[in-house]
Image (tube, rainbow over all chains, first blue to last red; front, side, top):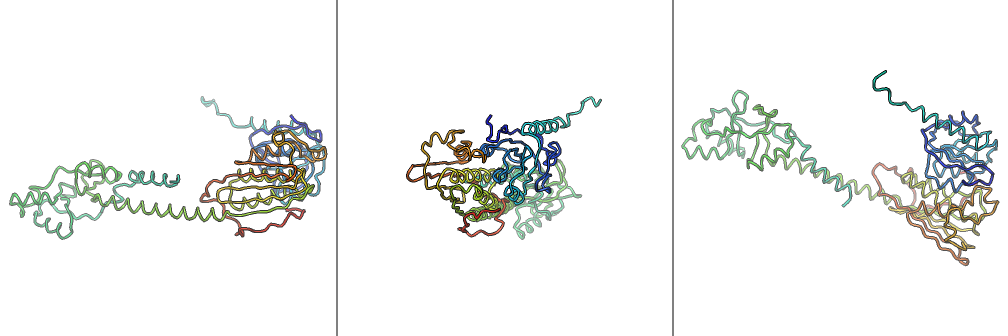
Length: 143
Length: 329
């Protein structure tokens, strides 16, 4: 585990049942900074990091990038790696250049008030709940 | 030979099993009743250049008269007798639903020139007649049409691969952190327009982004060339120094010389060069304190595939791309 420069935790990507960006907004009680029309995008994995090079090292795409950074490079990184959305934690506002680039690339930015840890915990519960909701094979006896 | 060829050749073999007798047989068959004389049949065969004809009674196939049978009848002085006296009665037939390979096997086994085709196995209802040359000519037609498709495919592939030729050039200024990623994003869009598969686009874009960031963060400025060839994309990045003191160390994941300022911006994790190496199929980096750093990364492209997205708009082969001017793409 590496700790980012902004003191946020850094965690690895996992692969889960897909949720949507609007599911993320709901469980994080977040605000949408841009690209409201893109909230239906699927999220299949999560990467939480303040080290963008580390994000670039992950193989996942259609993932949510959780970060404490606010500069335009978070959107560049998201765009280049095919992320579904960017989540900025701890009630920070994205820089103007980040919002403009996100609008141009069609990548929604979600603003969460909670800490990185809390955001990860909530999203982990969301992804697990989705996983459990997968229909199980019914009782072969038909009971 | 390409995989496509091999697949087509297997397909030709499969054709032999797939093509049914009813597709190649002649349906309008000239038949005679058992009461016709050998002479009449002989005149018909001579006129039409046939080598045999089926004999049908009450809609049922009862025999076949071949040239051999006519010669036998002639030997016996029976040329003006009804055919039922000397015709071949032990019939080999082929049902119309059988594959042509089954018919072909019967030809080889019995040495016949033709086979009466019956409606279904065990039936004596005549529905057509098939010769070995019917099968051959039908197969040749099919093979020919496949060969034409292969040729067309190869022409289209060559044209598509030629279309991929493209080159991008970016000047990268030192400390232009706000413009970092512009070159990578432009490269990504261009590769997407050329129909490069998404996973390869991603790898090349990561290479460009990391290399761009290295020049911005660690050098006095430089440039990046992205060369798109039919079978590969080559990224060449050169800077004006001051060079990497210890490349071996720089290749270790996590090793960094980045300042606290750079790290606060989200970079300097010591992952740049390892990331580039991981994404590239071929990777070289040379550095000297005098000449600066030169990095070359290559990603191989699969052969152009049919159905890949053609360029959205024709791109001139060496379209000059202005150095990033800042702002938003």
